[in-house]
Structure formats: structure tokens, C-alpha cells
Image 1 (cartoon, rainbow, N blue to C red):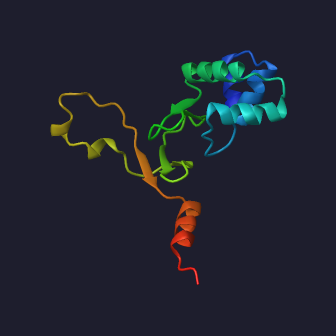
Image 2 (cartoon, helix red, strand yellow):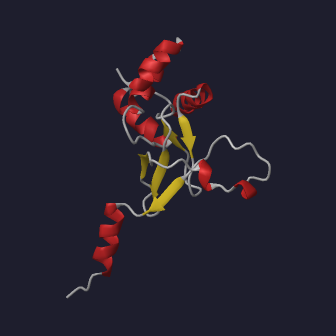
Length: 147
């Protein structure tokens, strides 16, 4: 049983066939699917699942705090089931691929007291950007001399 399914069962959340398949789609490390990707994958397992069911279930999971809604660079919202383990994200600025990372440094001390403007800072969201190996290889291949 997936970690997300286990957490939902422990909460007593009613697991319909549609909710179950959505939770199964969201299972795994480094999962950051858009709602359309969740729907496409869920429909592969349960063809009659509607896009509306996917959107409403994702909204419920976010409201429950069981799934994080992640948006970077104005791209489509992505849904991250890794809601209970502190982490940051590494995003490819080429294709948008996203990975969970757990750097050892806490980002809060990096914000100097003078830049806190009296706020009692309780958290930070850090996103790292770069190019994934596939995008680097594609760029290198495109710039290589053709002879």
C-alpha cells in the first residue's frame, strides 16, 4: 500500500474507486504531476474517471494537507504527495522536470535578521533551477559542429 493511501485510510477518508486510483497515481518518489497528467494516468487504470473527479479529488487532498500544490515559473500546478517530509525542489528550466531534494542546510538562517522586517519567520520555500541531463545533452548536441 502506498504511503498516501495509508495516510488517507488512517484519516478515515472514504476511498472510492476514483479516489483510490488517484492516490495510486500519486504514489512514489519525485512525483510532481499536473492535474492533466494525473487524469491521463488514472484513466489508464480506470477509463471512466472524469477530469472533474480528478480536479475535485486533488483539491480535497491539498485541503487535507496530504498533497502539496507546487507552481514554479508560471507553469501548470503540480501535485506532490511528499507533504509530510520537509524538502525543496530542483526544477529543470528547460523541460520543467522536477525532483525533490533535501539539502542539509536550513534556509531560515540564510535570511539576515535585518531583512526579516519584524516577521516571525516560520518557514521558507526554496526552489533550485538548472538543466536536467536530458536538456544539457540536447543543448550540447544542437551546438556540436555538424560535419
